[in-house]
Amino acid sequence: MRKRVAYLRKSRADLELESVTGENTLKRHREIINKVAEKNHVVLDCYYQEVVSGETIEARPEIQKLLKEIENNNIEEVYVVDVDRLARGDTEDQGRISKTFKFGNTKIVTPTKTYDPNNEFDEEYFEFGLFMSRREYKTINRRLNRGRLASVNEGKFVGSVCPYGYTKEKLKGQKGFRLIINSEEAKIVKIIFKLAIDGIGASNIANHLNSIGSKPRKSEVWVSASIRSIIQNPVYYGMIKWNHRKTEKKMVNGVIYKTRPKHDDYILVKGLHEAIIDEEDWKMANENSKIKTGKSVKKDLKIQNPLAGLVECGVCGRIMQRRPYHSGHIDGLICPLPHCKNCSSHLYLVENAILDGLKEYLEEYKDLITTYKKKQNTEEFDINNKELIEKEMEKTQAQLNKAYDLLEQGIYDNNTFLNRSKQLKEKIEQLKIEFQKYSVESKNKKMEKIKNVIPILENVVANYSKETDIEIKNQLLKEVISKIIYLKTVRGKGHEKEFNIKIEIKL
Image 1 (spheres, rainbow, N blue to C red):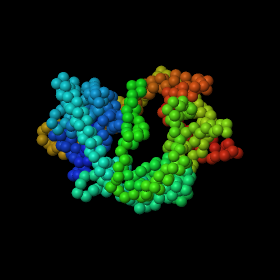
Image 2: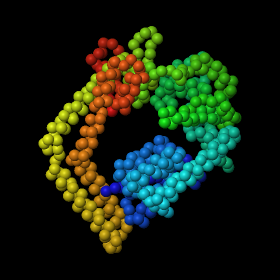
Image 3: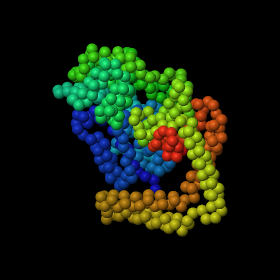
Image 4: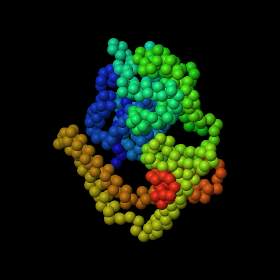
């Protein structure tokens, strides 16, 4: 049975309204949708909800899950408070939403109207609604940007995350916020600037803070990039900086990428907040050559790590990095987090371990295909169990149909019907899951995926070691691997038996 679901999204405009009214938008929308569902004698199977701007589908994981379910023909109706909650993106996103609902034969139910995308008039009305919501989104965005710019020029803080050393408070009698000093964090900020003025580099400052037990807000240890970011931020001598890193969009091979390059034409004004250090100390700290010279990557630099973007640290979850040595020592693979307990390895050893793992996958998949073909000639699944589940599903469906009859006859009130039908639908879904275990179609799909991946694995195993171009090697691995988790607990020579590399390959 196809499901009926609800989609709820809280936008930035809702967040701003909540700060004034104190009302929970998602809770209010859920109540509205539940009333519509109850009026239609419908029990909603699940709720997809998220707190995010509606500009792009890529930025909204819940709508992606919903669209996937619709594509798989699993959704009959989607309940929303308004069509603009589904999409406010560009014409490409709107087209994707419209086509997915149309070809998935899925209706959109709102408090005022039910849209059937396969009805010509409903389709036009729905697409017009999406177009108007996009225009409204652009208008709201322009108004918000004008408001932010005006607030910045007044010295107010408009960011979402306060700089380390500060919290924010609502201004009395007017809109907006200002920064106020966090006394505990401000002590650390003063230590950072004092050490920088004394000529200490960012890495050594980070090591010093870690040694005295200080921790940043969202991490366990300080790193040089965080120290450099604090020292170069003019907020600490009482200024507000805005649009220093404006978001820019670029299209590469049909895919839109967002970048935040540094700009020289940013806004720098006197803030309403109290400074932690004076301007002279800030300038002296920034004159420290060890602070000014942060490492940068040339835009035209070719990839040097065949495992770039693939290997994740098994301790802290960060992406492992290639470590070159100017002394001529063999390149290593390290975790970028200082003091992480995951030990580094020679890069080529990790490559070898990955290739060994892919070979094991290849042999395992070939064995599965061979075994499956043999089973197809005998008994492919337990027919008795499948028949029992089918009968139970038919029985439960009959009970659900009877519940509808009892509601129409007035024997069930709305609440009794909703509770009973919910229980029966949940039971049907569980039976479907059980049924899949004995389904030939399900096994066939799994085997088809394995068949498709075998030639790709064979290509990687056969050609990786022969290839000399690092970028092509990286692309070969990414064709078949989604992620590799790396773990090594013992470092140093003389422990060969103990510090074997442990990797988990996820295809």
